[in-house]
Length: 197
Figure 1 (cartoon, rainbow, N blue to C red):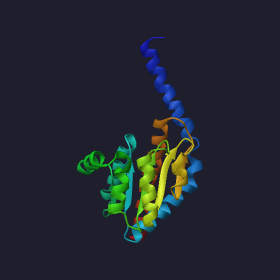
Figure 2: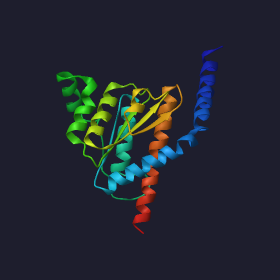
Figure 3: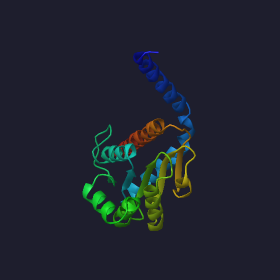
Figure 4: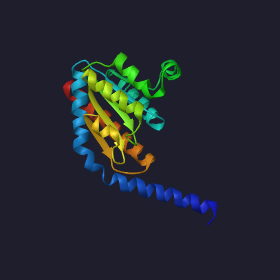
């Protein structure tokens, strides 16, 4: 088989795996509604939405925080949200002086309040820096959510609301996380529009 044939097949194979996962996304509807309610409660009580992840999940965390602060679809005021993956001085100083495993935990300890919603993204559920940060948020009294995958890993026993995408491919799990994240933005927009009538 030529490289061009392999590439063409790869595209279709990737699409097939994506569609197989998304055919089951309705399974996460109730958990996503619970996430929305937690988000609504946090924002209504003066809290903020805190996001963090590693690698591609770090980019997703930043993306979703930006949707809250700037806007998603509707014109509205800014919503309090932050990604703990964006301050290079904190990330490098803490990792250099202490340990990368506690780089998000330290920020949670500094910035998190009981009224906040704290969302960790980890496709494996075994990322120690995510798990330690969610545990720290639990100690503070914030509501914790894990967007995770595979079998959930250790994080399923740490987060108050684990949303476990039951799939084994990292890229597909991340696509599902972004679907849920974008839907959350849309649902928050709808709630704000209703409240402003």
